[in-house]
Image (tube, rainbow, N blue to C red; front, side, top):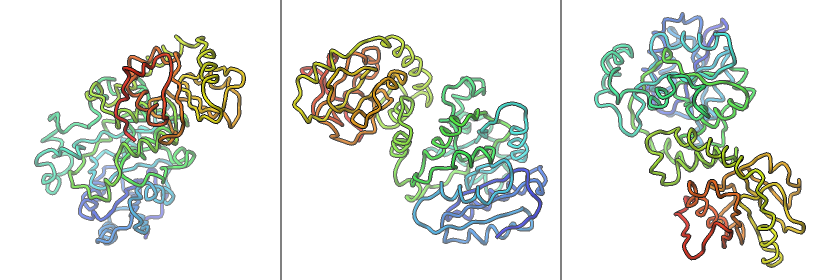
Length: 428
C-alpha cells in the first residue's frame, strides 16, 4: 500500500508489531505536524502483526502520505523491518520513530532543519520525554489517550522523572555532543534521523540483532566511523507512551546484544561498553557514559607509559616452559615476538604495536584490553598476562583475570600471584 506521489523532503519509518492502538496515536501526532503533509511521508514497517495494524494504517490514507510494508513473523526482526522501510522511503532524510512515540508539532521541521544547516553530515538524536521502560511516569499512559504531546509536556515538562533518559549526559556537555567521547552510544532508534545516503552507505541496521536493544548503537558506531557527527535536537522532541513490552521484545538482553556488537567491532571501547552492561561495576551506576569519558584517557596514558616496554623476555620464558602444542593467549603482547614463539592469540591495547607483529594466521591479533576478548570459553591452555598491563592493572585487574580464566585453563605472568589472585565472576 502506498499513497502520495510528490517526492517528500523527509521520510518517517516506524517499525511496529501488534500495537495498533499505540500506532494510531503516533500516526495522529504525525498528522498534526505543522510541516505540510506534502513535504513528508510515513513508512510503516510491520514485523509480522496479526492484529488490525494494516487497517489502522489505511485509516490515515486521507491524512498522511503513507507506505506500508509487512514481513512474515519470524521472531523479533525490528532491524530488518526498519531496513525494509528505509528501502521504500523516497526522501533524502530518514527519521526513525518507534511505535507509541508521539512527536511534537514541530518534530519533523526540526529534524529537517538540523540536516539543512551548513556543516558536516550529521546524525540527529531527537529529545524523547518519558522514556522509562522499567519505571514509567505515573499517569502518563492515560494522558497520551486524551491529551496532545504539547499538553503532556506542559503538565510534566518540569518533572525530573519525565526527562529524556540521556538528560544527565546532555546536561553535562551543555547539549553539545562534540564534547562527549563516543557519542554514538547515545544514538537510540526511538527518535533519530540520518541522511538516507549515509544510512545506505553503511548498510543500515545489522539484521543479526534478533532481540531488543543494541542494534541502534551498533549503527551509530558505523555512522561515526563513516564520518558523521552526532547532535541532539531539543526541538525535535517527542513523548514516549508507557506500555508493557512482550516477551518477544525482550527475549535476549542488552548485554547479549552488546556482546554481539563487541564481536563485530572488537576493540577497547566496545569492551568497556560490554563491561558496563555485563559486569558488576558499582562505580559505573551514576552515568551511562562515564566509563568512556574516564577510561579512554587512562588507556591513552597507558599506551604512552608502556609504549617502549619490552616483554620479549616474559614471552621467551613462556616459550621455554610450555610443552609443544600448548594453546596460548597473551594479554599485553607488545609489538615483538621472540624467535621460535609458538602459535598464539595476541592481545594488546596499543594498536600501533599490533601492526608491527607478523601477518601470520598462527598469530591472530586482537586490539583490546583483555576485559572481554572474542575468544570462546576454554579456548586456550595458558594465558600469559604481561607486565605491559601494569598501568591498567589497578583499574581492571579483577576483570582481566576473570576473562583470562574464562578463556584459559592456566593464567601466568608477573602481575599474577596464583596464591592470592582470585578471578572475578565471569559473565559468559
